[in-house]
Image 1 (spheres, rainbow over the protein chains, first blue to last red):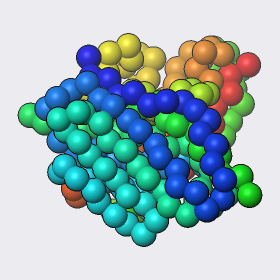
Image 2 (cartoon, rainbow over the protein chains, first blue to last red):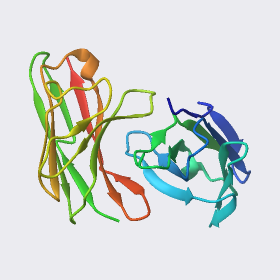
Image 3 (cartoon, rainbow over the protein chains, first blue to last red):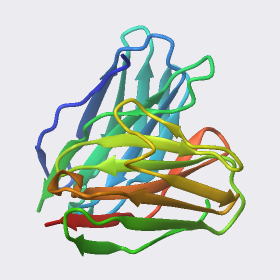
Image 4 (tube, each protein chain N blue to C red):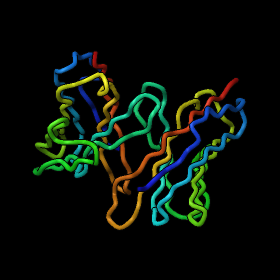
Length: 112
Length: 113
């Protein structure tokens, strides 16, 4: 069974700091990796996708993928209180397995 | 990305009754999915709604409990049948657009008393 593991948190960081969110996955053949942000009472929204090893930057967000170690991370620079949310990691396999597996999410709290 | 709407946004229902949730997309999409998210939990896929054929259900979910319709490429319904308090959850419609990416509707918050 494919598993995606995340620390549930909460992860608490001060405003302006770097928040680091981590995710590990069990399926070594996974090909696609996604980070979703979910505010309380809202539905998940896609913020980053990454497909190859290394870093991918988009504004204050950087996704990092290491397939050999089977982990993917999300860095949020200059964290703002508005970044306070639950961050869901999703992993998609290869070979026709098109349904992503979601982690439980990490709750991030950015305090002023 | 596609704009997805769901109705109702929330409901409170009595046990033993059924509720049908509607999902409307503003563009034609091939893949539509129904998820459940219970408090403090992650997303659990209920089924993939296939246009013109029966839905494909995940382990632990059956058609009698969660019948799904997909009459065209922009619309789907999920019915939660014979509800019990354990069915209290957020139900989310999702569609897939290019690059293997899923987008979610606003969700339906269901409370069963």
